[in-house]
Length: 142
Image 1: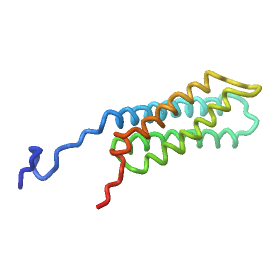
Image 2: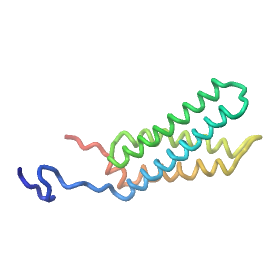
Image 3: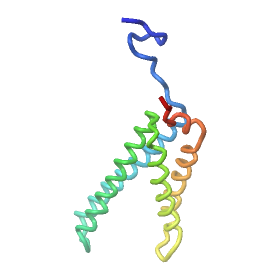
Image 4: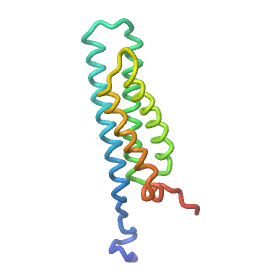
């Protein structure tokens, strides 16, 4: 076996992700955990209380669980420097901002929910467009 400059046998030295990429992944993982907790709460509510539409409640549970899984996948992709996470995260967080804006207004306004949705979305978008994250997730032409 040939020894490589990194000290390994047949493998390149491990590449450490940029701190901005780690921060992005951490935010995505925190959002995924929050949505997983919300999913668990919704499942409890679905079976513990009387619902007007069981099928509608089940649909919301499935959508919430899917969003949590998708955020987790984006977090893993961020740590790997996958190029696809940029588009996926931008789409998800622009929609999250739209929901946050809706939480600030109307007859049933919940500003605290709006802030909980808006602040992480802005932080993720800022990190996504930062130079180190763009460079780490750029697809290099072969």
